[in-house]
Image 1 (cartoon, rainbow, N blue to C red):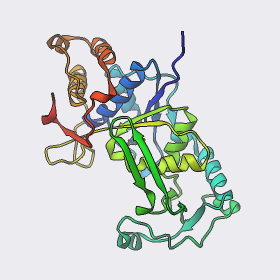
Image 2 (cartoon, helix red, strand yellow):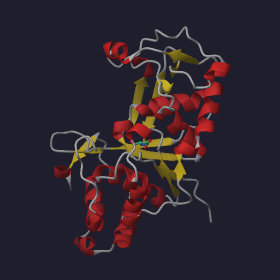
Image 3 (cartoon, rainbow, N blue to C red):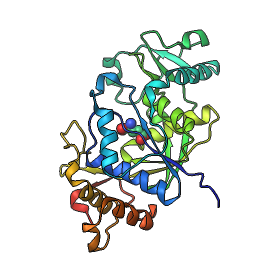
Length: 301
Ligand code: GLU
């Protein structure tokens, strides 16, 4: 029997417990992996201690478990991968692609989201790529820098990375930036399919660019709509999205399935969690997911 080469993942940040919006991404990535006989890996993106909530990582693992979303293999914690991120930084600096940026917040704010490259002359040589100084490290983009993405849900998209400019790989507070850690770890874990929320669509071309620079194979991407509240804001800790009610795990799953465009037969409402997931795996089709950037509870089928 042919072994599937599909490897998917869910990569939550431990900034709080999962809410319905994060369950949507977990479920979509789980179902796509299982429907393709693939593995589903779990990565905890714990690289931002100031934003982390003590105990949140363990709580997320329990929440996934209670929703029947069982991952394969050990959990990867990004905090254990710092040497790999530093290595990649060294490689990029050897190629003359990095520079130190000491622009302060006030200056960056006046630029309105498009970095103007004003620090480009502060090239970082290999020795200084050791990120122990109080500047941020940016990657210099070529001009033009146009990235084409064939998103499995949102279709063909074209991005001009110069519209937002050179981006940060290592933060001024000496932490690796999300773009660097995420793209390296997708490669390290052998991820073939990244299924995640459309709020990360802007990050995808940056991650593709980094993988290209490092000569690493780019995975396939699919961006699902994010769950928004009635005011159109993405559900998040900032707007007080409630943690998942674990007494309603089965109903939470059915709700998320409906939001993704899958409504089952009436009997499913009385089915067990494993039965719901088995039904969902059998009926799963990425092209049924609405190619939109957001959904709200009122969009349920
Ligand atoms: N850790 C990110 C978050 O929780 C998601 C990363 C990803 O799926 O690429 O928003």
